[in-house]
Amino acid sequence: MEVALVISVQAGLAAALAWWIGHRVLGNPSPVFAPSAAVGTIVAALGQRARRTFELLIGVGLGIAASDFLLTVLGHGFWQVGVIVAGAILATLVLFGRSGSAVGQAGGTAVLLATLGPVQKDVELPRIVEAAVGGAVGLVVVVLLLPLNPMRILDRDAAPIYRCLADQLREISKALDTHDQQRAIHALDTLRGLGPDLSRMHQSLNGAQEVVSLAPARWRRREDVERFAGATLYLERVIEHCRGVARRSAMALEYQERIPAALCAGVGGLADAVELLRREHRSARHVGKTQQKIADAVEAAGRARAQGLDDFGEAVVTQLRTAASDLLRATGADPTTANRAVRASIKRGEDSERGGP
Image (cartoon, rainbow, N blue to C red; front, side, top):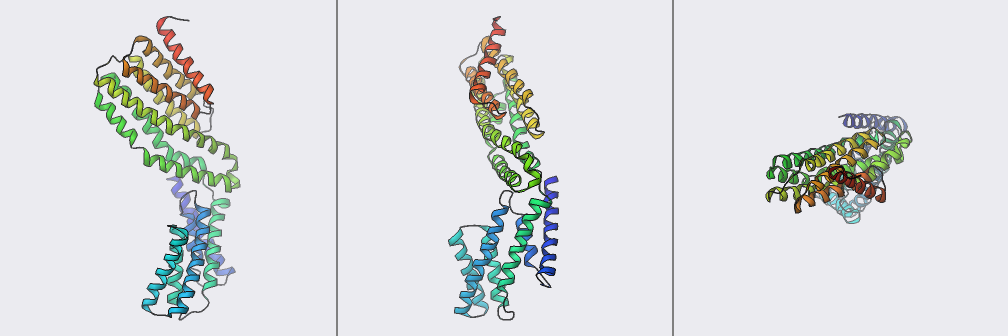
């Protein structure tokens, strides 16, 4: 909600500034195109605003070029309007693909020139100047005047993923505890459905990286955003490993294998670590507590192994270990340190159960 409110204020401010510049500086009594271009830049997808401004100018230029040529050849009339607009859009699609901004501007410019050309001369230059002014104003607003908080952008779209992953790990833990195979299968299906949420998170990451690259007021958050970007790579791998935990758990339950309580605790402990990682990343705190939670979860899996597991139970522990290693890497640990920590935690769990050192 906060991000939507900021974008709304950005759009309103950009439209007002662009209209004022078009009216007072450019001398246009009704500067329609400058605020339109400014708003078009603001409402572009996060991470694409600089490119959107470039596309606005390209679209206007192509619309003017195609319209001038076709007007000279075909003249004015109702069917000429259709041919001119179709020609401008076709030229833009052929040259730049399905770029919505460029195509929209090319089509709008073609409509303007084809309909106003007979009654109002020299509209080409004001059109492209206003588009440039509007795009520039939009960028100034989002970069200098009201830049978004990049960590809020990221947390908005990452929170549902962390929450879903933690919830489904707890579902798997409860499924193992209650010997409910269908509960584990449902958790697996839910984890498989995270694709659209991951796509939105990647888009938000692009937007946050754009903000910390362009907005001086947000440069100090570059390190936080880069740390989040690194964690995102491993988070996707953790999700894949947790799907494996759900799959192997369902198989263990299908074959009625022995399920020690420590195995349920290990899966549930990994859920706690996922939630804690999200909170520590959001507040830019040290991730030591997350690392300890991961160690506790793996140690519980080690106790379960020492108590005795069948084939699919062993596979659950293997997947949990791999997920824990990648979750440690999401906290910033290097691969060697993460793998060593997981092995040490497994051994501690096994030794504590067997009465070893």
